[in-house]
Image (tube, rainbow, N blue to C red; front, side, top):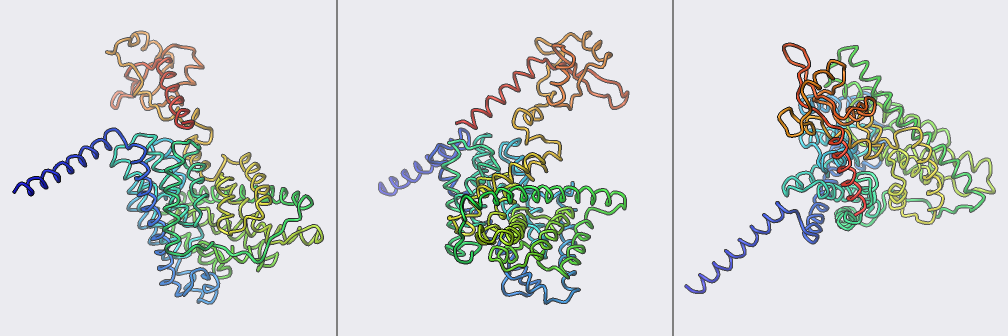
Length: 560
C-alpha cells in the first residue's frame, strides 16, 4: 500500500507541476527554451501543411487532367480536347465562387498581404474562417488550371496555425508576431526546400525587421519545415540547370544592370496589370449586376480559352520555367509566353480565384531573362556567357521586385537551382530591379495591395500606427477628471471643429495641426435627430502620448 501511495503521490505532484507550468505559460508567456520548443512544433505543423497542400494539388490535377506527371502538365494539356481545356478551369471557377460566396462576405481571397497586415496591426493574428475558405479556393484554383502560385496560400495557412497557438497561450503582440514568423518561415522552406531563404523571407517580408529575439526561433522553425520537405522529396532542387554557368566578368556586368532595369519595369507592369484587371472586373461586375459567385467562373472561362492555344499558362508553370532556365525556348516563344503569363495571372487574380504571385513571377522573370539574354548574346557573342544565365538572373530580379524582398528572393533562386557560382550576376540584377520597382509602386505587390485597402504600411510605423488608435478610446468623457468644458466644446462644434467618434488619429492629428487647438470635441450623429451629439473631447497631448508610446514599443521590438 505504501508503494502505491508513493506512486500516486509522484503522479499527482507531476500533474500539479504540469498544470502550474501551463498556467505560467498562458499568463506570463513562454520562456526562451519553451518558445524555441513551440517554434519547433509550429515549424513541423506548418511544414506538414505545406506538404499536404502540395500533394493535394498534385492529386486533384492528376484526377482532372489525367496526367501522370504534374510537372509536365502544360505539355499534356496541349493534347487534350479543346472543350475539356475550357471545362476544367470553368468548373473550378464555379466551385470557388460558391465557397467565396458562402464563407467570405467581402468576396476577397486572403493571401500574404493579409499576413503582413496581421503582423503589423493585429498582434500577429489572421482571420481563420475566411482563411480556410481561401485555402480551399486556392487548392481548387491551382488544381484546375488557375495561373497563380501555391506559396501565398501556404503562407496564410501557416499564419492560421500560429494564430491558433498565439490565442491558445494568450501571446502578446511581440510573441504573436514571432510565432507568425516561425510559421511562415517553415511554410516557405517546406515549399521550396530553402531553409535560409525561408527564414529571411519571414523577417524581410512578413515581420519587416531583423530583430535578434526573433532570429533563433524562426531559424529553428525554418529548418523543421525543410526537414519535412526533404523527407517527402529528398534533397533535390526544384530546377536543374544545364552544365555550368559562367559570367564574363567586368565586360558582362553592365548587361545584368540593364537586365535588372528591364525586369523592374516588367515587374511593375505585372503588378499594375493585376490591379488594373481587378478594377475593371469590379467595374464590369457592378455595371452588369453580376453576383460575386459568378466572377471566378467567368475568369475560368477566359483562362480556358487562352489555354486552348497556350497551355503554358496553366497552373504554377514550373515546366515552362524549367524550359526557360535550360534554354529550351526560342526568343519569340519567351516573349509571347511572358505576355500571356502576365495576362493569365491578372485574369486569375481579378477573378478572385485565389493563389499567390511568387511562382508566376519566377516564370515571368525566367522568360524575360531568357529573351533579354537571347538578344544580348546575339549582339555581343564574344563578350557574353550563356543566355540561360540571364534567365536565372531575370527569375530572381522580377520575383524580388514583385515581392519587395531582394535578400530572401536572391537566396531562394540560389536554393531552387543549387547554382551559387553566379551570385554576382543575380545580385546586380535584383538590386537594380527592386530599386526601379520601389519607385513606381508602393514598394511591393503585397504592400500595394494593402495600400489599396487604405492601410499605409508601406510608409512605415509612423504612418500606419495612427490608424490603430481610435478617438473613442483616447477621449476624455464629460464626467472624467480633466474633461473639456462642455460649453466650449459646443461652441467649437458650431464652428466645425470636431472629430467623429469613429475616427482614428490618422484623421485627428492633422486637425490639431490645422487648428492649433488643445483639444477637439468628439461627436456622434444622432440616429433620430441627425444632429451632432457631444461624446467627449480628444486632447492633443493624450493623442501624442499614445502615438509616442506605440512608436517607442515598435522601435524597442525591432531593435531587441
